[in-house]
Image (tube, rainbow, N blue to C red; front, side):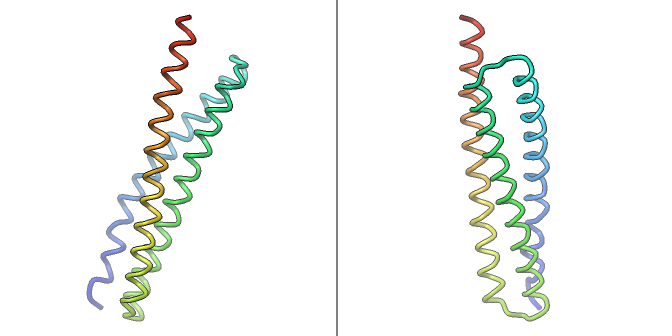
Length: 123
């Protein structure tokens, strides 16, 4: 039963990513709600909704990664089938990487959206 706990040790880090992404989703949802009631700029609202969808996708990736890490730890602890546990752990890391890539794309697009908002207000 060596190293069965290694996949479990990654979960708190992903949990923090889930927490921060949840906070981003709440803030973005509130911003979209305000835009819908006040702004009426359909293009901006559409871009923000796509951002919300991207954050949702990142959350899904992180949830799947946590699930796979838990399964990996349990399989390694109970069955001592390290081959299956290793594959599950590697898949979890790959899925978490997709979540991180989604957050990078979100951040880049968010800056562009805010720059466009500033340019539109100054004109």
